[in-house]
Length: 269
Ligand SMILES: [Zn+2]
Image 1 (cartoon, rainbow, N blue to C red):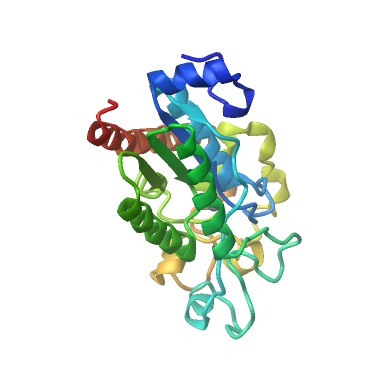
Image 2 (cartoon, rainbow, N blue to C red):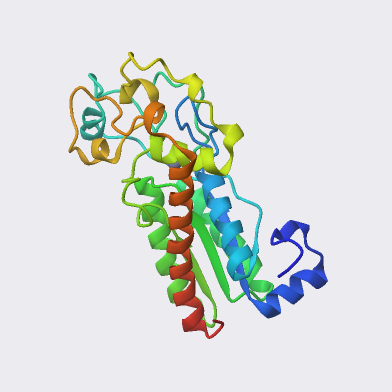
């Protein structure tokens, strides 16, 4: 086990020693994105970072500094209607709803692709056999871009593997693809207690409308919830550090299963 698993804090001799022991490098990434008034905007990337750091500490490998880059796309009218917008012809990108006080930093999809490809190229030059890009952002265009990139890597690489992993929704169905609701707020509360302030939310007697707070349960995206379009997994009552810890652990185990399968295929188990 190296002194630290953080790539940028290791000297060349230490990097070489860990590379010889376990040729795995994790690269956490995700956008700076609105996650409700109660949570820091780096939530997704910070979540990916926690999972990557703990995985490397437990099972070997090193972790590149987190790339705060992710993408989102324009919402169509059907989706905006499902989220409870009365005028679904408005222009909305990702979770940047009209009443949010700060805009997200969504990069264009092509920027994300270039950055991931180039990062992989540089790390592979250094001899890593397994690169694990850890994604914790569930935007549909981000997931589509990642699955296309996965195919590209799989068909062009020999003797090494680039894994684009999203260990979130599959890790815990209770997160259900929800955005900024109690599930994600709990993750951040467990991982970085100082980055959550539930006092930023209105008092309980005020309804928490999806369209007003930029939070949404998976049910709204899927169209299985409807009026009155208030947040179901209400962060004011359902956030807890214990829940965040259980979900974080589930994410780590989900990632571990994916990584172990690849290590076995590469013969570096
Ligand atoms: Zn998120």
